[in-house]
Image (tube, protein in one colour):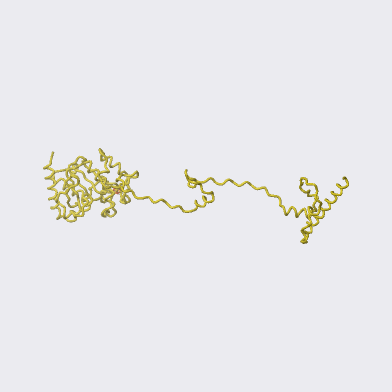
Length: 329
Ligand code: SF4
């Protein structure tokens, strides 16, 4: 038995040597050695746990190649965790989350913005946080119980229309806030811009004479303009400039509630009465502005250029005087 075991060991050793030589020859490109392996050559030994072959038993050349055939596995670095999905990528309750790669892809794609449908009912006109005024009903902008001081405070250092760019002073309405008679012109001129007061130039001095001609003094009446800043070169204010500034005048009218407003010149008349009729056609005839009598007449500056029109203005002012006298309280 002992001899048999020794013979087996020798045979096994020989078979391993043959297999190693065969492997070496295969490395060199020799073909036809398929049957030569340690297992094929050696008698079947009793099965036992196969220990890894010691590197020392392999010739150096084979050892190098063997290690090249089976490279040692490189330790893999753990992958960084995927980035957390952004808020827009996070599925809502009830939705199924798409795989991450789809999520990243979809985030690069342009998204279609929702179209907001216009409201069937446009919002009411209002004064915005920044002072913009979008009047539909101008008087609705006034607050119950407001005063001239409140309105002036609202105007502030107004930049609501382009006329602020060339002004020196804002020219506010001045006079007796409880007056029965109010005069309204178009916009300040050079003298008014300089002084900050309405109707103080040559045209203003003529207006003072007209007021005195009907038995009143300047201090007894209210005097203002549709626009409070001087247009460059004394040009006519644009419709938009007049529309922007007019609400302040209308609020003052609503506070003062005079019995008669004398509107001076074509531009002021059209802006106050919202009419397309010209001054030549409407002057001398009482008009109505929210229950207040309005008398259109020529602007004093026009009278300075054409003094022959003073008679017509005098006729118009006599009607105003007579109305005031007939309604004296
Ligand atoms: S004209 Fe009237 S609206 Fe325009 S900037 Fe002057 S105060 Fe403001």
